[in-house]
Image (tube, each protein chain N blue to C red):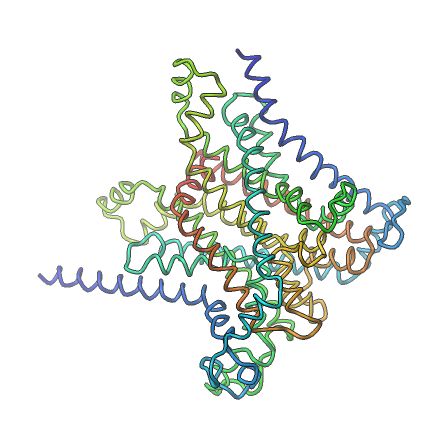
Amino acid sequence: MNQQAKYARRHIAARAGLYFGAILAALICAAPFLWSMVTAFKQNRDLYNPENNPFRYNRPATSDHVLYLFDNTSFTTFAWNTLWVGVLVVVITLSLGLPAAYALARLDRPWAGWFGVAIFLVYLVPPSLLFLSLSRLVVGVGLQDSTWSLVLIYPTITIPVSIWLLIGFLKAVPKDIEEQAMVDGFSRLAAFWRAVVPLTFPGIVAVVVFAFTLTASEFIYALAFVSPTTEKVLSTGVPTELVRGDVFFWQSLQAATVLAAIPIAIVFNVFLDRFIAGFTQGAVKG
Amino acid sequence: MADREGTLAWLFLMPSVVYILALVALPFLLAIGYSLSDVTAGDPSFDWVGTRNFQRVFEDPVFWRSLGNTFVFTLISMALIVVLGKVLANILVADFRGKWVVRFLVLLPWTTPVALSSIAWLWMLDSIFSPIDWVLRQLGLIEGNMYWLGEPGLAMASVIAVHVWRLTPLAAVIMVAGLVAIPRDLDEAARVDGAGYWRRMFEVTIPLVLPVAAVAALFGAIFTFTDMAVVDVLTNGGPNNATQVLTSWAFFRGIDGGDVGQGAAIALFLFPLLLAAAIAILRAVRRLEVR
């Protein structure tokens, strides 16, 4: 009896600790965004008074600054640019990366091992080293100041890391499956497409989400290649349009941050379990 | 058959290889060329100057400062990211009510474009309107303001904190993958054999999680090492170059300063350092797996 009570107490303490940790972690991670949401609806006279309690509305809330974002800035254009650049980059990444990963994981070439490592090392060449020469190259092909330059260049970031992850996922698919498919009369290509790709689907989803997040976050190339407002993406467009010299349009900036953050986070959350499943196979067995 | 597979392998690899050669290898060589030339934004003609750019870079105290800062930022963030990532991963694998909301909020730092989340932090750490300062003032702990981004020590701590805040969720997700992969019965078996919590922790869980923790550390290191958005938005390298890192310093010299040759020379330093770190970590992962 006594023993049981001890276990029950310990259980309750563990649960309480878990909830405490979970809530604390959520609050720390979300703090800047929660703060942004409070700020976004404040009037200037409320915001810029250091005596005011910053956590509540000392004057009525206003949606002026949020509307300003939509009416007077190119925010929607930036969001749209980020979206279609991301989607195209993901498509390019998969159509180049998936066959390459398959060749390295499955076709039993003696050089596959070091080739895989070499491709991962490409990922380590930082954009800060390449953007000087790449901006010349972008001018050379006539894409300067066009969002298409990002579609051309971003796969340099996503392809190497995607191949590396995909190799792991592909290795986790049992070999018998495609051998069986080939015995059943499929060609190697058809076996890859009909048998292996569907089984690798969780891994592919993980790569899609990872590649899209990397693309949406990229900063240096977007800053170096594209200067016209209508061609910019979120990460460069929002700061340049809403920071004029020393003047920060704080409320609109915060609104933009939250509006950009939430959709990406929702998509990521929907696929999180697949991402985790994918990473287990990819990173550990890669 | 073997020949056809060889051809197929090359067919499959070719597009990626051509793409990487054209848009990574070629620019990489060009960057090395720039570092040995006197190319500037105003005068793009290519004249060989040997190692003069490197000599000038070495004579510049700001370079050594940036190099040191890069190491300090990366090592401290990496350690914190791995430890906090493990704690967060333990929370994320547990079952509790409202998990979806917690998961959503916890992932926000990683999924938000870094330039935008840095702006949110810039406002949190504002020199006058920081809510942290307001709370500290109300508690009577400070008078006036902290100037989070204005004092060298605080500015460095702030930059590290934002890096850790941003990358811990990614590390946690990677480690959740590792924790999920640990066979339950191993832990059960140890428990049945009478191993206590700490013993199980150090002799079962940690060795099994190490490879995946190393992968998390590698990603954390790469993102911290090569990132300049956080530094650029928060401090712009200041105050007085106290938070300057190699990437931002290369950008200032190469783009803002227009000295492409020197910018390239500084940026080149990142590569061998990253290469060494990556090889060390990947080898460690291999060795841990074999065991």
